[in-house]
Amino acid sequence: SLEFWLTSGRYTDEFEKKLAEYLHVRYCALVNSGSSANLVAFMTLTSPLLGDRRVKRGDEIILPRNVHRSVINALVLTGAIPVYVNPQMNDRLGISLGMSVADVKAAIEKHPSAKAVLVNNPTYYGICSNIREIVRLAHAAGMKVLADEAHGTHFYFGENMPVSAMAAGADMASVSMHKSGGSLTQSSLLLIG
Image (tube, rainbow, N blue to C red; front, side):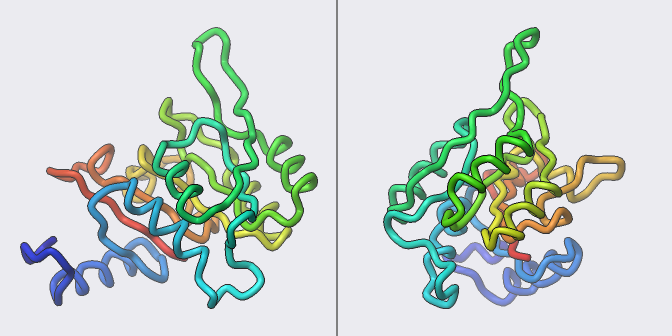
């Protein structure tokens, strides 16, 4: 923490507010890791304040198969059921790509009661999905959109970068400052639009 406390205080609160303004998001929370940010994001979806759109045990969430283990842990904690979208492969490079819009659209059509879609933006290999279109499709179906931006911190601070999840209209993003953001120690943000 900015104050060497185990919880937040006035300097942390002020920093979160100023960073939220700078990033053009409604709320920014400092957390110790992207894993924690993912867990908090998923637990936020269980809030009774969301009414019928809240995630309850047995509800489905659409996500790529190549998610970080913290997302799997969040599924276990919330009791949500994964609906996997298999990312395409680039056989020449031997890497998985992002989720295709067509595959996400098919998953939404096949699972219209799913509560949310999670997108890796970018993948561990730096591949971005068309997150703007995925957000549009998910929101049109009444679904929330979460993004794991562990490797996309620079999208918020650079020019001529791929679009960040929040700029694309996602509802929440977990952003790991220590991977591509220059943080001196493990630190992350949970951004809420």
